[in-house]
Image 1 (tube, rainbow, N blue to C red):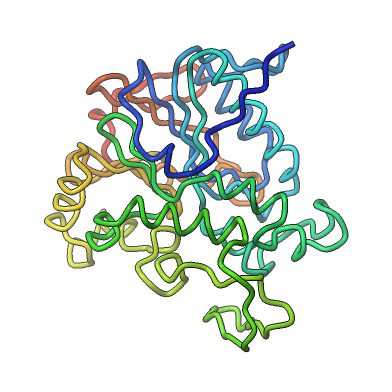
Image 2 (image 1 turned 180 degrees about the vertical axis):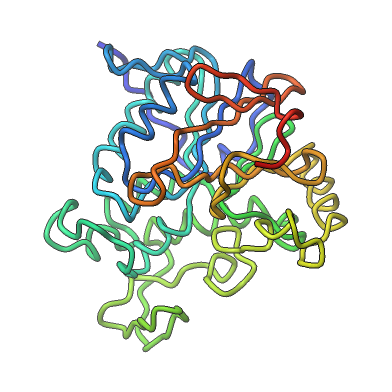
Length: 312
């Protein structure tokens, strides 16, 4: 059989990779296994018939939010773990980023969960930092840089761009349950009105940089506003500074749903969440492909140069 080489022990070891022959990015999945498989297949990364990685030395980046809303969550996690091993065997790599919905499950906010029992009878326990599932998520970075592209679920402000490795490290440490128990009552601000006492809190508090209602790399909506509202932050200048600090040419984000994969600021930022989960809009899948300096949008049977389609 195949030797099981496990992915690197720490998330930040994944944070910077040299440019591979090809990078493919897939946005928010939200519990829809078929949407994920469809994207993998038309992007030539996976064969459902053979149940194996077909991407060779390509790198796949899934930009977070595989959990919540849909009902295929365990099968999706299982497939992604399997592809990590198979891709590594073939000289490729699968990188899965943390999204705000992975975070929400780990802080016991189950507002968006469709199937509460699919990870056993106590979902809060299943995702509690330090649990096997949370430790699996500890290998998912917040930010990854592959070649000259930065990937992040929601987007990076300048302040966070300067501390990417620290943020990845802190998120991993928190999810591994190494931050020590919380013994006092703490309120985690949430627009859903949920708050946690020391009885039902995760063992440890999440890093401040990730918290909702901050310019969190998991939650910020700033980048979704670039398209028609140039008055919104961050202005193009901030985006350019972020890219300079990271020494990359572009940033790729999910989180904010667009009608199709689109870019802004002449290709400095690409937005790849199109609401393809059947639990959201069920849109036909699209993925982003980067080969050298060329960027393409892939769909079933189509490969569109990104320069030809800035807006939807």
